[in-house]
Image: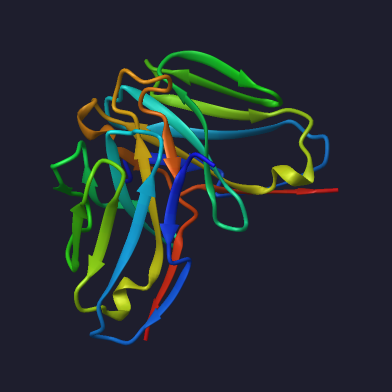
Length: 116
Length: 110
């Protein structure tokens, strides 16, 4: 099925551990995003990649790194997890123009991360 | 003050009622998105609009650019409409970044 695939769905980490969240889309979208969602705060942008080969910081980039591996894949890495990074993480992609649904967003199913 | 604000935060309705969720934004935008997040957590894009009105089934979205206001209407509401509805403003075209409201939790009782 076409869409955004995000793994893992659930993860528990100890403080200081590292992990990588994987995201892949098969819609040939140019732009990809990582968001975190916390109660009472809505979705906040961590990093985004407007096109293959570029990445930029969003609102809350501290403690995270990203890699746009190719047009399909955009990964998010936590080098040294902290309890403040407990959240639900969403990957998303969008067509930045020219496609059948320009600027329409598609979201992954989310990763629920707990840092203890 | 958030750049994108929604009201109400919580809404409970009886099946069949007409529902309105409001979104106000304080910045210039190129488009406004309405999203639906189900209890399982998945997020689905409902509408993207930059002017006027769009309709899909029982859902209607309107936007007034001059007043910086958008509404999402649900006609003949059903318990399966229970979800969090999120509006998000897109500013410009660079990277298609969105600024999100906090969401409206809708519960439709049978």
